[in-house]
Length: 342
Image (cartoon, rainbow, N blue to C red; front, top):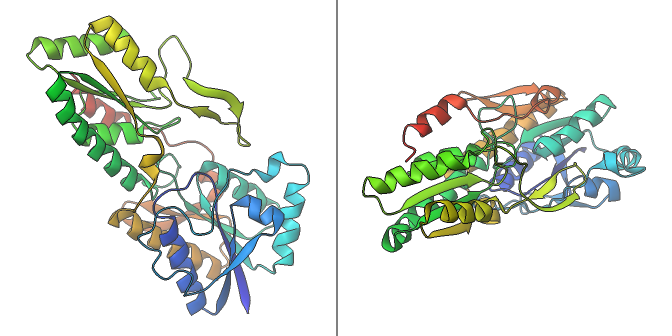
């Protein structure tokens, strides 16, 4: 029986299980056996696997996270790991491997394709920052969670006449902050693509208060930075893909706003709440479509490609192009958001 592998890497997000389910059901229908590689590239280095059957994927559609686990392991940062990946790929007798992940996971996949492995990809990230696809699954769930949080903070902000600063995820791209901020009626939205001008932010809030509004909502992406500074980090230690742990910008911003305006300010950091829990219907459908497309690419032996959403059509794009650069915020959309600032 022909055999394919599937792995999920990087941060978990809602919708991963819908991709796994789609691949498994389609593959079995076509006479394939499916091997789940546990915990991303780490599982392929260690040959840690599990067989995936129709029973395994039954009922996982509404479940968040990933049933096969994930990690941020980078084979290219571990001595001998790339050779282990290749060795175990052959040992498992894989005809192809489907890698589901963001820029880091798919970046590894693109390199391994060049080195001779048959790999196709599916784009996953709540940050929505992968190139060559209009949307990634996980993003819709994240902005819905963030929007609901902003809606709830409106009532307590108004009751106590406070400024509420909401820190959301977004390392280098501010898609979550921007779209959740627009949907939630935020009064200021701060993103990594535009350095924070603290004086301008405080002026906007003062003008709003001068019009009789005694509360305001400020949404800030975790990767946003002040004009004269750098990103606010939780720690300097890098992960295997060279990323630092972000976080803390919300509290620093909140302190500065209160100090410069005199308005009582509170901070809420949504953190991992944004990528946990049940995926939205949109993410379940998109994940399913990506899984089907990935399996179609395997059947056609069209390797080195990634499933992508272009308009309302799922197509195939080169993995190399998809990971060549990050997709940052559409500044036309940000200009629309700025109309409502203050």
